[in-house]
Amino acid sequence: MADQDIARILELEDERFDAVLAKDFDAFARLCHPRLSYTHSNGLRDTLESYVEQCRAGVYDYQRIDHPVEEVILVGDTALVVGRMEADLQVNGRSTRLDNGSLAVWTREGGTWKFLAYQPSPRPSGIQSSRQPTDKENEESMVKK
Image (cartoon, rainbow, N blue to C red; front, side, top):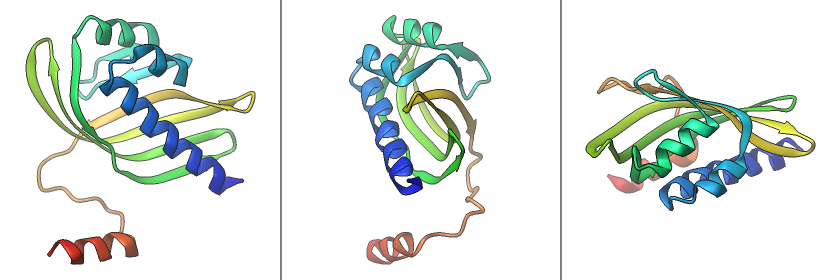
């Protein structure tokens, strides 16, 4: 069951970022828990309603989002998605590039996973993850050389 849950969480992560890129904020909202706490890399925090409202108003206009996942941690009906969020976007009309470490929290209610919280942290340049690369990542880096 854990492998199926992790696979589903990874699908949902793709869906939430795809929805924001497509400006399909109804689809994004359907993925979310009503008590969503969405923190931005500048420390400001939004609710589901305020985040969707700002996205619809064009305050946040995403052009590109990459979201590599380092680890999904399952504890009961809670999933922690540890990874990164790299993005190009317009914030209030100003071009912004993000390179954040990130923590996304999903909770399962009534058999359905819902996006509950998000916490990004800006990554200082030159900082590497403390995590050891997987065999697949090692293979991919060898191919790129």
